[in-house]
Image (cartoon, rainbow, N blue to C red; front, top):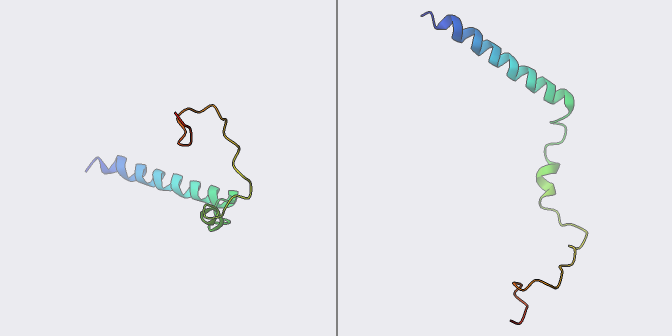
Length: 64
């Protein structure tokens, strides 16, 4: 029963830290746009990838 004197304030302090972190994230704008980052993965890049150097002997197009 004596352990409750330690666990209850510890649980309340942990809950208070969680609420404070959530309020900080909301105030900082972390939840302003939750859909665009998920859809950004599906969009194609407009730029071409950089050209590869021709010295790679393990490339599948090389005649060895």
